[in-house]
Length: 506
Image (cartoon, rainbow, N blue to C red; front, side):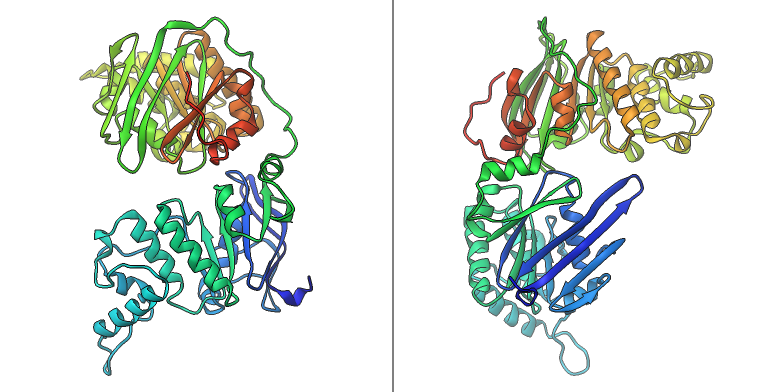
């Protein structure tokens, strides 16, 4: 295919952040009138690439060729003027305005004198919605709409301006079957008129239904581009996973599990978020929770810790109901939660190591007066036990490395004598050496009889560390893998919905 057949060519585009190479010389072409899929696991670089196309990010190197013109980068206003429209995974709507006002927010029609022509705005909005076969009243306030209708309004908003290249990021994540049918009809009808589309989705069956070609990314690099008539779904999954990574850590699977000492998670639900999730964690094992971003993993454990409201759900430990009413109650009942955002939720960065380590235990003891000498002794002991690299326990946590900050968070919960520990992305932002140390600490906790749940987007990490892995998708626990079933390929298959219909066991 000649270069003139492409509306967009990304040439050797790179983007780095401190410690992370998000894109490494990625090249990709999108043809006129093509629906081009972009796939890859969490962290593959998909979002970074489309943000560069949309002008929200500037690349560190490479070129963008759009309609024959070469750019080092684009600005958001420039991308819009060129006809590049993006529908993000999260709706970017103003809740208190009407549908019509949202559609034409930046180009509201006006009368002479600069007064907004609201009637005219509603009229042209109605014409656009009818053209797209979206049946939503333009005068409705966005806050009154369902999740599905809000997503359809976001899609319609992309067509309120001239559009030549449409970028759709997980567009069906909040659509029902009817909404999906409307979207696919919009894509097909506008494709016939020459519209090019970049389609990002973790639902591979959708990609094979609507797209012409697929580009696969892995760890910030392009694996390959294929015509979807020349590749199978299984081959796409294998390309996404790639060759087996060198395993930095491998744990022997637990064999003598104490089945009488279990944590039972029963019927956790919240409408639109979590759908009746139940499983058990046995003492002596590490239980993993896998799933794509937005699958509900973090939302589930926040409900279990009492941080977020729930419609239903019970926690039983050793047969006793320990369902926490709030985080304070969870701490009292021996539950510790190492949050995904350690800097935002887990630490007081401007305070010293000793104060951060004692935060949760002070809440648990409920003392009027602090026992500072005891706090110092325990902080020194935990610093040595966890090998926290710090000049002293009075060093401010902000000055520690990511791995040592994570150890401080762990020490905080160890000081409470927590029996149940939930790790949410325990090794994000830490170096390789610190990762292995954290794995060993988690295994040591299990050997000492703790109940451990690990959430991770790093599937090889789950395979190396966990005895069983529950896989979540769209707020549901779709299966529990154990033994030889715990493989990276199986996790990806269930997380992406390729293996729907298997009974949940365990």
